[in-house]
Picture (cartoon, one colour):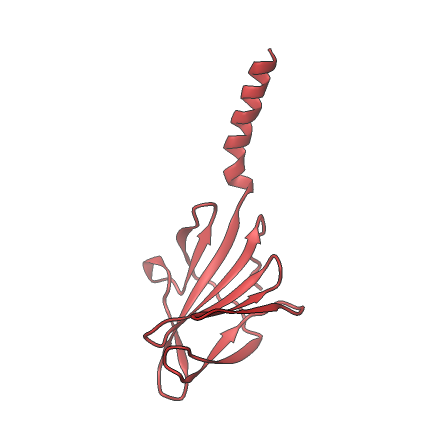
Amino acid sequence: MFRFWRLLMVTFLVGVAPLSARAEAVRYRFVPVDACGTLKQVSAGPEGAIGEQLTGFGLRPQPFNRMFRPNQIVTFRHPYTGRNVTVPLTLPQGTPRLEYRSDRIVYNYGSYVVEARFFADGSVDVLYNSGFLSPLVVE
C-alpha cells in the first residue's frame, strides 16, 4: 500500500512541477541607426512581435507584444564598435550588483536580472529575467 501512495505522489509531483516551476524572461532587440549611438527597437520575437518571451524550464520562445516603460536611459560603450550606444532600460528599485563580461553588462538584483548584451554588428539585446518561480511584472 505504501508503495502505491509513493508512486501516486511522485506521479503527481512530476505532473505539477512544470506548471509551478516557471521562470519568465523577455528579450528586446535594438539596432544602430546612426554613428551618434542612436538605437532603434526592432522586432525580436516570433511572428514579428516586438519582444520575445521565454517561459518555463525549456524557455520556449513566444511572441511578446507589450513594452516595458523605460525609467532609465543608459549609455554604454559598445565593446565591438567602440562607440557609445544609448539604451532605454526598465530597472527596478534598489541597488543592483553590476557584473561586467566581455559581451554584456548584467544588473543583478538577486532574483531579478536585467542584461544588456552586445553583438558584433552593433546591436544590443536587452533581457529581463524574473528568476525562478517569479512572473515578470509589466506596468
